Image 1 (cartoon, rainbow, N blue to C red):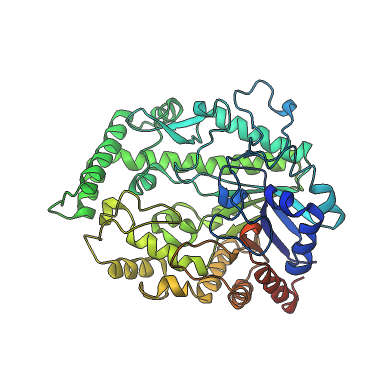
Image 2: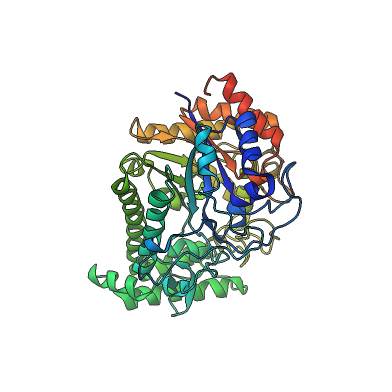
Length: 476
């Protein structure tokens, strides 16, 4: 039996290059046998054309990307729901349906097709194309409507459960890949995001758990005000990190709120898996795990355990992008947590960031070495990291960590970068890098790979290098 060789792909690639031709390229060059299609997305990186330069295929111009649904939703699955998926208004897509127009052709070739949906980590991605989406949005500690949907809001939950039924029953997809990238309120606040969520549903749940809602709200407000003072140039005499700890100790309700949010988030994932298996036990349930969880953030790594996912998953896709990790992790260190090290207000922009403030409690190199120790990484020094990326040892060790945690309960299909936009100053991925990364994934114990990030970003020579390596290893 062949290993799973997956790739994430948006509707725009099939529209630009044709369904048959695209599948020919994916199979012949990369040995791809599983398509993870972006059926619903507001993120250009998951569903649009390349956002940084263009590869050697497809249309060589930026598309007008609004986002939304890339299939024709069946009204029968949404009943009287206030929220319904709206077809993307972007003119390039017309009546194209990523399920109807791809699944029959893919099945004839022996390929599986699963929708891939990625959670929204930051407020820069907004679900504005969905009518009434504001009714499911988070509320921050100041009572203002935020951007992300709330996991405790029944409108949001029912909306997604209805879509998954549509995808698996009506569209006959082979399973679901869900991308876990949503941040808790405290983690988001530390990265410059609003302090969420204090919607009526979260407040009601907190009261049931005996959490003092007013004290928690006051604590988050105090942290936001502290962040604002720090970003305005205030220098706490006790240091930035100690100043933050003082607030956390004064308001222990903040961590109670964090635990409530985390339990709701993980519970939502279990409910998704239960729904998939209720519809059809043979449908596959997988989770894609953000690189900030697998690698960059000790706080997020502590929140999500591989072995817990093993209880309700068929496969996991830990993201282990090696080459772009160099520039991304160096940025993460330089702009990490304005309350901890006094980074700037724009520290979390994905592609283009300017250094806005030096670290205060420690130097950049000291912060990098601290994180290396905490995360058990052994990578390049900061001045060389963007140009070198992470090593193959990183992939091998992280895949081995995931495999050891889950045992034989689930399969591990790591997301291996063969063309991920890292941004200015980063290293470009070459075929030799791809070959080394794929081999490292299998050295760590992988049962397959997901060629990442998205077909619209990938150079064909890198796709060929991945396929050649998989064939040399006898995996396909």
